[in-house]
Image (cartoon, rainbow, N blue to C red; front, side, top):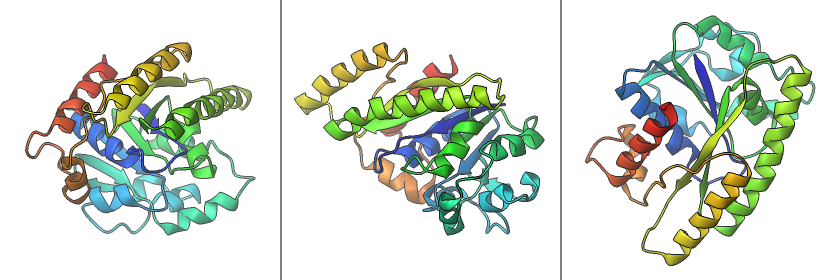
Length: 246
């Protein structure tokens, strides 16, 4: 089982859509996928959950068995979020290994776990980063997102060291950057993309095929089906997943 945290401290960069799309592509390729919604806004849960859960991520973090909280979802299974997760942000004394430890119980049931982290560097994001084997960072090609990449990388390196300090021996790789909302007709987009590629090389990671701007992504949030209509964005995510798997 390989666990991926999808993380960026900025909102509106396409984290949930990227989790949905990457998971859909992996599931279509035969991988057993578990989604974890760590965002109190619960956007991923509302799109993917096929049933009303009795328990969710909050309950697991409070000691509930993870097997009693996972429910069926489109393209796999999901551990859902709810507004109670916002209460966790004030808990500064939590054991950040709790989610990682809980996942041990289902490590033979899934090939890939995808964690949708909230748009901040609070405790829920830390739970995701401590549970992960690798990190994907979606961002848009605007100044603030690109400037924030260095800040995100600093957080990544600090978490990597802290994981070692608390005895987590598994690898923790920065798997790469997913560029969303890419408009190839805008010259500035290409210029920023080229700059981002160079920056990623300095950080010893990569930038995947950019996800082209299309209204199809908005429809995914309602249907959970990224393959309807064979959109350019779906094609781009398929290429990203192919590169990711390789």
